[in-house]
Image (cartoon, rainbow over all chains, first blue to last red; front, side):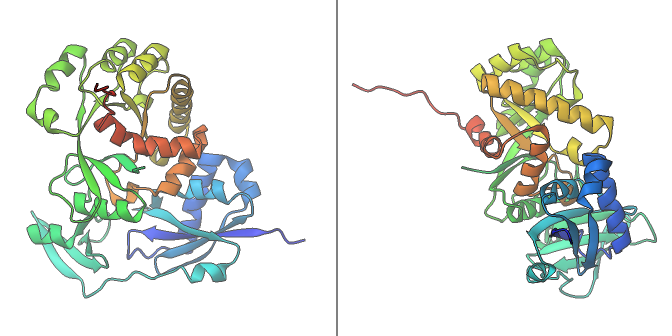
Amino acid sequence: MRTKRRYILVRVLPYGMAADPKRVYLSVIEAASSLLGDAVVGLAQPAVVFCDGGYAVVRCRRGTEKDIAAALATVTAIGNERAALRTVATSGTIHALRRRMKPIRPQNEAGEAVFGETYFSVYHYPHRKVDLVEKGIKHQKSLFFTEADLEER
Amino acid sequence: MKITDASVHPYPAGDSTLARMALEATELGFDSIVAIGGVGRPSTGLKVLQGVVIDAASQKDILRQVREPAVRRADVVFVNAGDTSFNRAVVAIKEVHVIRNIQATRRNAFDHVAARSAAEHGVGVDLSMAPIIQSRGTKRQKTLERYADILSLQRRYGFPLTISSGARSILDQRSVREVRGLCALFGMTGAEVSEAFASVDLLTEPKQPVRVIR
């Protein structure tokens, strides 16, 4: 008989991060194994079933969703990039979770800002949020501002 | 009952400004935050309290620092915990609101004497979520063990607890529900978490003694 499952919808932060499902899965497994131990994670059977548009859906066995949600809160990186997974909702079907997904995309073209000698790409998001990503090839620094903060500078 | 994140460290200490952290905290279900450092006042409806952290080696040093204007202006005064005698002395200082960083001290550094004194003087103990979220292995195990010890003392003596994210970035902030899940790891119940979230308000505005007017 097929076991009952629960699906946890999580928002991937920072916005605009192109998260690869496999990397998200590895981060989830690392966080869960570290916090709960291999035995609990083995029984919970967590898996990433969807990852797109700044959201991911994590599947687990019914009854273990609270443990897995606690483990998701301890994810601090995906691959080598700093990230966070914020639990939005838990449901028995993926269909119900899709209704809760509101893709967050930059509102306009990326601008540019300079702090000291560092150049940043500026991305505007809803609620007057502004993310600044350092221009470069790797290990770019990110800053999280609001439009009011940016205007003051 | 207010829900307060007892400490965040905005830009320039972290990578997110106070306004952005306040915006995120509102979305995460908080009513107020205590900002350690940071400049400006956010335009959101969220209440922002100014906090200050005292890192001192002796009681004398704390007494000197609490008289400084920057500390006197702060809404919440935190002191980093130290050894047993230091902690016993700290909880008896009137100007101190919360003792923090308890997970970094030795196991018996905050004992039953300090717990009783903290309850008598209305000094809170801060439980930071940052070591649970960010550390791994034995360091996290020790933190969970220490928090469980503090919780058992709190249940016995009734001193206030505060819960903080210790966030230096919006990526470190967690929702109220997630914090409940993390606190359940060391045996804290939902009601105790709610009480801890509300205790910053009680520490900054303690109840006045009842006056009988005839």
